[in-house]
Length: 448
Image (cartoon, rainbow, N blue to C red; front, side, top):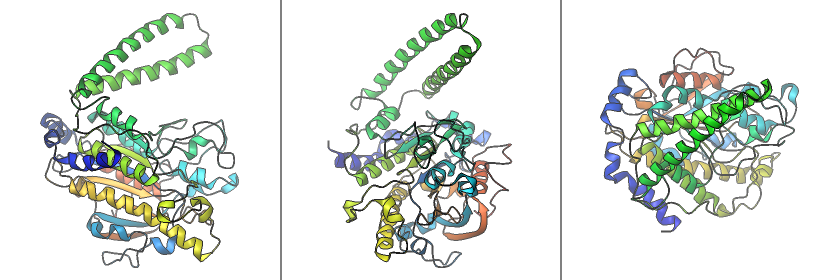
């Protein structure tokens, strides 16, 4: 089965009998009682953050008027058929991505601040950011699914060294952060992502393969833990600290194994495993979107991030007739021809996003609503106008109904407020308690 057939297969898998019981009723009941990551109907409440690079052309991005009578601008026109499930958010800023005393590095800051809202430490080696909002939510609800969160990308990230103007590459190639010093590296290979979700091998053998792999891992972990305990008595304090960090990682792997076992046999879609990373960027983006749909359909996770490309990405778009690099074009300096090409790239990304939303809209959830109705998806960029490297009035879309907690079908202008305020509200909807501040927040957004 070639890649095109695989893509069609992913679209067809929503009718598989196994997906009619996405979550055991006992788990749904427990979720509803605790109010964790569920809607008023008891269906899973899902959250995703999708990042596109290099900002957008403002004149083409923003709708004409605020409110419900708006018309999409040229860039977001592909969302017109889904306007009742979409709201465009204006006036949200990331002040901590502005230069300040740090000088250059707006692409690193735009990327690294997007989900953290904190000031990054400008260094290639001393990495300090902050926990990202997806991980805050995952800590609250991640135990309800096989995977507390999923991190996706369409490029191989650089995890060491300096990238943008002396900032560590970790900032520019990671959206999700477990804590201030530890990013959550994304998966960019569709095959590896599929096998992580459903197991290796052909349909019918994946569940057994997963079981064997977990048994092998458990045996290795038992051996490593015992060996490490014997070693600790012969180490100095500094080495014991390193071993403690190592053991923490081992315990996290054990926890993931136990969590996977708690949910019983894995879903095994009647699909062939994808062969790997497609040559076409467009096919790669669509395949990763399809796998994210599948992860939500099977309730494999309720929290995800997807970086379509890192900020500063300079790939060309030959499939829409643009041979120049995206980043090079974004510094258009008012050149109308270059502006028009950037607007076409912006719209291309919006086309892919609209296709993703439509798949979620066409997929039925356990309560009979669409999965999109029970989901919140933030789609945006950490740069507003890449030509000027601005981080105020960021181009943002909030898609989905949030299980009835959101009011889509609008263009909402917030004036000038921290984007972190949006994250506080989304976390509260997901059942996160005790979170009074996040990043540079000043309060919650009340008009969502």
